[in-house]
Length: 68
Image (cartoon, rainbow, N blue to C red; front, side, top):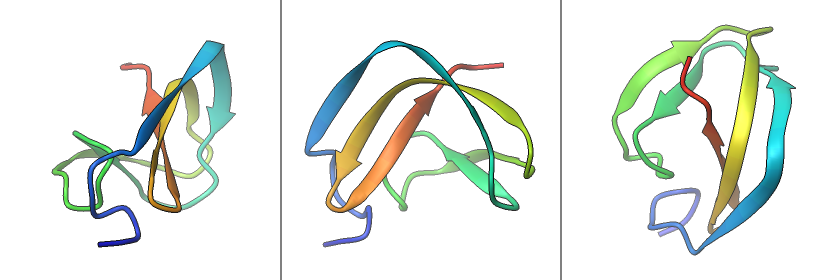
C-alpha cells in the first residue's frame, strides 16, 4: 500500500501549536491518518487551522488539527 493507505509509521510530536491556513479547495478532515478513513468535514481554502501534531504514512504527512 502507498499514498496514505496504511497505518501511520511514526507520530512526530509538535512542541507547540502551529498556525496554518488551508491552501487548497475542499480539504477533507478525516478520522485517521489514512485516505481510507471516513471524512468528517471539509474545509474551504483560506480557513485558519491550528496544527497539534503530525504523522507520516508512507510518503504522506498527515496533520492533527485542533477541533473548532
